[in-house]
Amino acid sequence: EAYQSLIGSYGYTQEALSEKVGKSRSAIANALRLLKLSPEIKEDLLARKIDMGHARAYLGLDTRSAQENVHREVLKKGLSVRQTEMLVKKLKEAADKNIKKNQVLNSEDAQLAHLSSELQKRLGARVHIQSKGEKGTICIDYCSPDDFERLYELLRGQS
Image: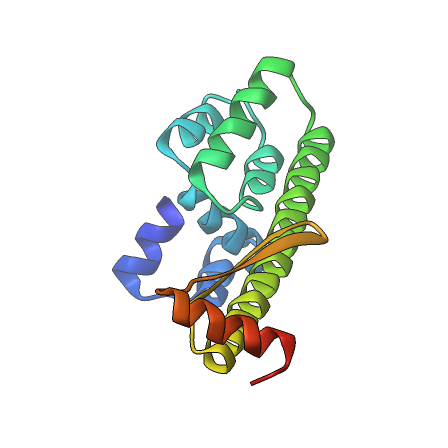
């Protein structure tokens, strides 16, 4: 917080501040990044319940709630900095895997929506496609017996 105050008061860059206080620019940058942590985590850092290494590891997580969950686990289990880094890495890998899975699902949803739209244009009727893994159903709406007959003939190939 003192580094942030000096930067704000005197307009120092991290580089200029590092020269003034005799620390490396990366040490200043890392200290400033810790300001993004929740008040609870900062209090525990100041109370030396965790090390700066723990706190820096938390910054690898995307959300404050994820940081606080890991923090509670670190305190509960007495994890070392290295163990905390490994836990954060595992959580990030799991989150990345979920993101990729969702991207694949979204891509499949987009393909199904496109196919549904194409069928609707070709048949002149509303089409619903539902997919469950490699299987699925296609539902075609019709509004009258004549419409059903028209669709039946289109599907048989006798239009």
